[in-house]
Length: 309
Image (cartoon, rainbow, N blue to C red; front, side, top):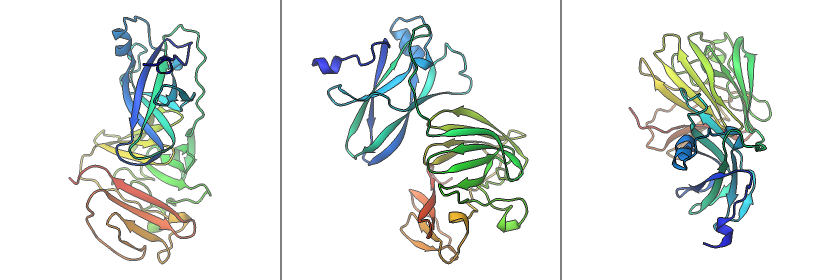
């Protein structure tokens, strides 16, 4: 091992962890990466009795020889429910692999950290996601989450998105009280119990940071639970528990207005059709469907990650 691979880049931090990001055969661009790190266990292995200092963490990227190529990799640390004590540092590390990562390549990172009590200047991470709480959207209190690609309004009691604004401020949902299919039927995800305008649920922010916001929702009787994880360019719904069979609907306004003769529906089979055309199909995985607005040339698409049940 030559000197460059052994270089300690951040002299004020005493510990570090190497991480390898493998793109697994796909091109990636500005990819958010997540991994579990138990800092308490790592410190115990090193014979350290102090407490992990979350504010000491800083990530850098290196080349294959260990030379630093990015001194400030954006990251955040999330704690899971039930892990709120300082001496329990089993955490989820989330970071941004900036730029394009071609298929067949790997990227190398070093995670530096220290203990509480060390005099360390915290890393500065500029947020890609901001949270405003509370705001009111369409007559209900919401979380407002702003990202580089869209602004989300999530109704706390409805446990659904009432508005989704693109960068031009056009609303791709268009929910409003009343109006039937032209208003109150609209929303995301419309699973039956989770629907904007409803008052069946409670919602809270489980974690929030510069790269990701996690919302946890449950019905008042606790029989239905879900989480939404919102990233800079997409969002992920996980249904944790459902009392009855559920469905997912997108009822909205591509580009701010539904234009049945000009908006296009795209399917994972490679087929496409006008929004006015009826169709019914079970798509082989990966299963997805998208809705394109001709004027803005943007698409909202929905991917199902788990198997059919």
